[in-house]
Length: 614
Image (tube, rainbow, N blue to C red; front, side, top):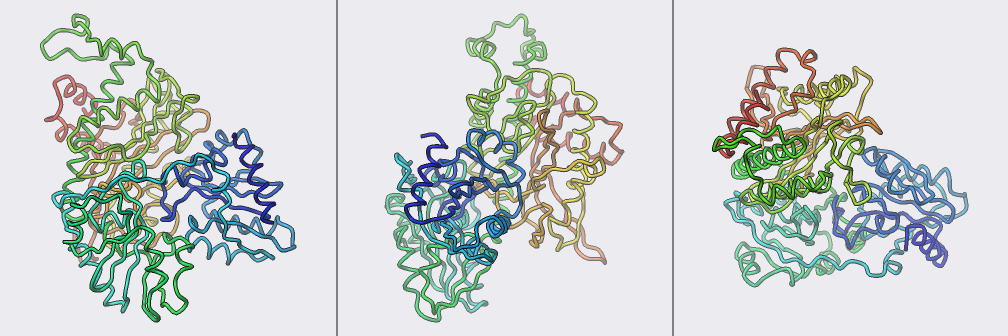
């Protein structure tokens, strides 16, 4: 069935159950940002593949509510169905306001699948719906979705302490004193990356995110892991039990919650617990809703994790040098330096592989595969940390663009190429974006690129008092864009997990008011951008570690230590727009890139990198 047929079928199902409106999300029971194929209900129904957004369907209306990152993508992916598009930061509250205004005043039944809606989202929806509405907890998609993908069933593996830096028992011991202090009996863990970090395992249940479908509970004197038996070997089960972990089945979390004794005090996170599980709590259990303590502990990397990140960034830099050198030579063979033995490129006889590469068109999809090959050559490589965004020309203006067989553009030498990519290594996770000019950039392109670079440098170079939050720094990256009447719709920075989800909280750098202070050991991205619809996009992104700077009579100050190692595109910079401080920063950064990557490169690659970092 196509999207129109599926929507019509759902409307029949709604009519059968006397449902007036249905809200369909792409989520799983753990409210993950990225999910297994089994849970992609909104994508199955509509064709929209973005990681954020819901479909609202009535008998006469269909709309997508998403954020500005996906505006252009949504227009492309939903062009075959008649719909309205709403771009908002606050999807559920604004959707409720629309329902209050647009649906008739008689009693309306609104269906949601509470297995994939958070407690927080349902509470907001109930609070904001002021009309004569009834929320119906119903799964209307499952009966319609034939040949639905299977639930993920990969086995987990344990992460060695030489990478994690702490044992499972040590991590649990960090949490248990907080239970004592808050006079709580249990902490229920529902976010998959929190659970994987706490119990020191990794898996492949969700593409790019090495987590497994599981729940966790930490009590004052014990801990429990709820996970399907098929995902464990007897050896792993024994090792976890030796760390003090009790293993129970994945669905046993329901009986655990429903049989908690009266007046027990339980901590949970309403943003990551699904409403269906929440409904099972006995009425006399004392519930405290607070952001997960594990999320906070996980965000502050220990020394072993930090060292791993730095190693991963060196390997990632080497892979990127090899890739971009290959790309430059493939687009322009005369750019190749002399071979190590002194022969020129003209004298060298190309290998069969080289001949084949020259004959294959360079497209967004083919270069993405080449980049993956370059990363796969590196030690401890596990996979990509997200689907590579290889976006040429106007595709770069689509925030989370992913090439497919219909959009797959051929790379030519007359526009910008934006490459946002990352790797998962056993010792760390990477996330980097570089935009390079293929051919000669225009004056407008150079101006735009330089404004983005100036914003990046301003934020990377700042020293800030301890206790500062990311939203207080966000303007530094945007100031030069705002001065020219330009802005971007996404956040400036997100946390990064250690061999875990590439998007991690609670820290962030964005205009939204996030009161989480930036602390030593946190790792974030810095990624300002400019997106000119129908023309090109520019984004420049590095990862940075929050580290101590100095202590003065005015207090303690922190700074960012840049982790990512790859040069910026000098050809795209208008140096007349940079001041001396910015030029010094660029020279220092390029010097560091060359010195750290040079020992791992062959002679051709060294010459290429030397020129790019001069």
